[in-house]
Length: 372
View 1: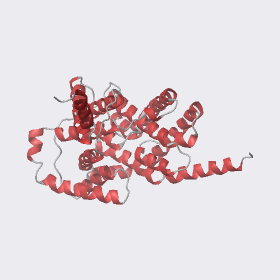
View 2: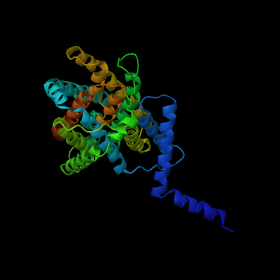
View 3: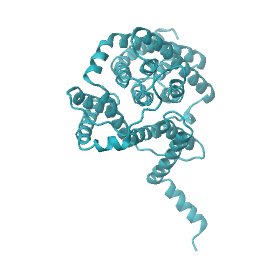
């Protein structure tokens, strides 16, 4: 007879292998997606897997596993979908709005810097750490920056950035689906049977180009290369007049599933000190950021002929991928949302780190000059 303890031990070892953890995570994420779909919650295949994986990985001791290449594949699909919206007319329209993009980006970052000042005072955490954790829309860039900078608490930065993203992903869908915003319908759906017939072979050409541009972006150390690369590659063909097929709904849902499951693993509150206080301040600052971007979006509506939904999603300090998913769901102007979000992403990538280094260096010299 097989010893029960031995059997339990064999199961535990098997349970802890990456493959089995991955399969269990898929099941948990899929269950979350189906549940959120049944409940009629906005973007269910992003929020559902994210919530299910987050809860399961923090409760019961289960160590969820989600390979990063799967998240990257989801970004490629989303990048292709965004690239299709960047027609020649849309790009001309975006170029004409570059000045207002710059002004609103600077205002938004300054607003977040002000919030970081108050959070720093209330929490007792040094301002450089909180500021780095509060820069909007540059999660991966700010985490990379904090790893390189001296005196920055990487755990706090990651927690603040991820908390902001999660608050935005959860709150914005409900706001955008509320009577505050008008749009033709919530949840733009594609006809799977109609679109699948035209998906091949043209899609293979675009898929190859998307992958090439994604890996070029990775080699050039571009921000979120698996999103930005496919956007650029697809837009080049689209602007040239070569129209690619739209993705069927199940592939768009699949991309959300791939991205949402990954986000659910990012928050690690167990590594924080003073968890309750920092969590409360992080949630509060995230809500203030959303409300601030909502106020600024009203200005954009006033000056330009765009819908409130398009304006709000363009200025919301979330990730370009999540805002693009929402824009597609509520039939907002996807090219405009992507244009604003990517502009801020590039601005943060190229302009913000040197500026932060200058501030931190100045602060360090000031502290050094103080008498002991």
